[in-house]
Length: 373
Ligand SMILES: Nc1ncnc2c1ncn2[C@@H]1O[C@H](COP(=O)(O)OP(=O)(O)O)[C@@H](O)[C@H]1O
Ligand SMILES: [Mg+2]
Image 1 (cartoon, rainbow, N blue to C red):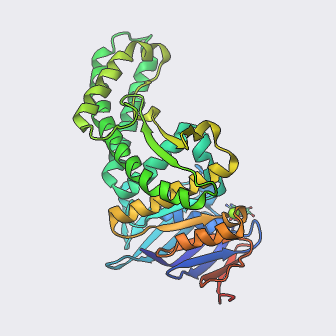
Image 2: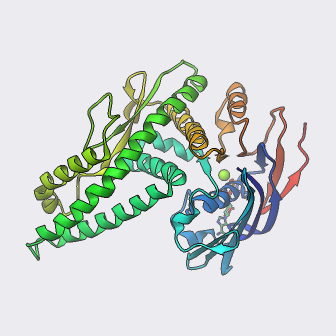
Image 3: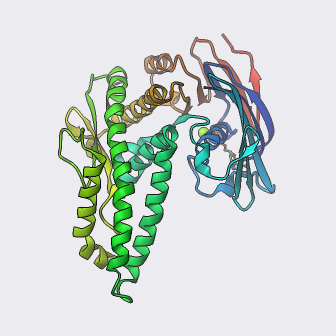
């Protein structure tokens, strides 16, 4: 799929702007704090419904204004589509796809596929497991709305269960209710774990190929799903969802006494992680700055490939500020790898000799420019 045009009104530092996109490489260039990342954020928002950087949606409304709008047109293999999103100053969001309002945020998944990479994304490798779970959840939700709905049901039930666990000391007889929540958590949790295991297995192939290509020392990247429930080392493949459900339910029951003491539920996919190894060493502990960047980039490029294989169309790759961190050879290599799908990249200056659609960003304005070749 390809973005054709984007129009922003009162979004971040843009009062009003409209720009066109080209099929291949699109370069947003301009000084720091001019609005480049803001524009990528608006595209991401049309895909995931959340900002990649803030949890307070109202921050995206131009200061002093009552609402922001983002309008995006795209073409898929089959048709042209439009996404119209509105955020008010309370942070309430509404979205229309092809002029039809959506009732559930999950319906937006799959309309516009994006993969976002920024220097911040390096935290994917070394920070808490929560970052890596989010990576899987966003990737999978984009490919399968059903996954997103399972996750929503799981999280809702988990919250209810945790509330109950906190009240335990006041009302001791909560076991019947816990049985109900645990059965539900085991059912949804097993779906989540199964899908994540498959996802990481396919991602491992794609990402390790990219990693070998971009790492100077010909390092070997290996990814595996690490579950507190089901982890038998080398091969956690070929496990059936029913088996995981049973195993998860048993773990929930055995953890119950401890969970009551702690006041929250300690077993399940909300505690799982991705194990990342380079040449057999755990990157979550030992990766250098450079390795973190290469791994994170390989994961994101891998995500593009598996999305394309699953959906039949490539998502849009959004690369924020990555070129400045790479030497010239790697910059060229990276741009080579992005051939074949639409990429939007931000930078302060762009000196690589290749065809692209340039968008010049300055103090909350943006305009298409002829490529300087
Ligand atoms: N809600 C908002 N209203 C007005 N300006 C904003 C808002 N949110 C962010 N900005 C401004 O946007 C600018 C940063 O834009 P950004 O896209 O991050 O820049 P860069 O081009 O460096 O990526 C800053 O000047 C910031 O003050
Ligand atoms: Mg920026």
